[in-house]
Amino acid sequence: MPELPEVETVRRGLERHVLGRKVLRVEVHGPRTVRRHDAKQLVDALEGRRITGVRRYGKFLVVDLEADKTLVIHLRMSGKLRYAPGGTEDHEPHTHAVITFDGGDELRFIDPRTFGELFISAGTNEAGRPVELGSLGLDPYLEKVTVEKLEDLVTARRISLKAFLLDQAALAGIGNIYGDEICFAARLLPTRLVAGLTRRELASLAKAIDQVLNQAVASGGSSLRDASYRDIDGNLGSYQMKHAVYKRTGDKCPRCASAVESGTVRGRSAHWCPSCQM
DNA sequence: AGACAAGCCTGTACGC
DNA sequence: TGCGTACAGGCTTGTC
Image (tube, rainbow, N blue to C red; front, side, top):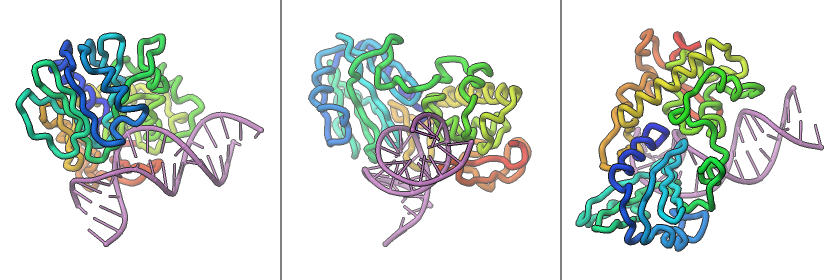
């Protein structure tokens, strides 16, 4: 489940391997890989052009190319990018797109559940971001989350803290794993209504968002048993070993040793410590 | 065998 | 009336 830390790790790998490289050939398989427009449009935008930048906004990867072409990638649940040096013939199952560079090295898009997608942006807004990403909220890794910003974002919102953290239009990049871990780090229950959080609690939340995401990026993200996230070179992340509550129902809370509980909040699984989260 | 998980979109219902 | 919200369903397939 690539969330902000995983996508940031992929972005760094992408920058290391493909920045400045010239695309020779692009193959797209399956009708769901490119679904916002004709696949040929993507092939034509990429072939013959060099990659000039690799950005990330929330869970979206943005690959800039010469002639102001912009490739946008979202991995959704099971999408992976894999860099394969030239001569690595075997494509693993569910390889839906292959970008071959000058010299023969390949960038492969693999996605068993086919929720992920690639598309060419129709243009950029005044901030230089793809217009399709216009509704994304504040990216807590690119921009510092302050109490003031959180106060602005939660006013008049009658939703739970967990729902707020998952709302990509408020904060971009947090998914179910980091949502639970941030609530734990902030000592706040996921069911709390955001409009009712005190300034002190919002300060704790801001600090938790910053700490959890930074530590997760430093650990190369989280790799779980299912969907098994790996970075662009096939390496696993290690932040799952630091998860305090996510999928740890019944385990001892690392802070107070109470048993971790779980349930459903806004239709999504949630995990929390009943003693030290309030 | 069948429920479930994930992110995100869409349709629908409902309360303030 | 209308907005914001919750909830269910859809998409998909590996895992339990």
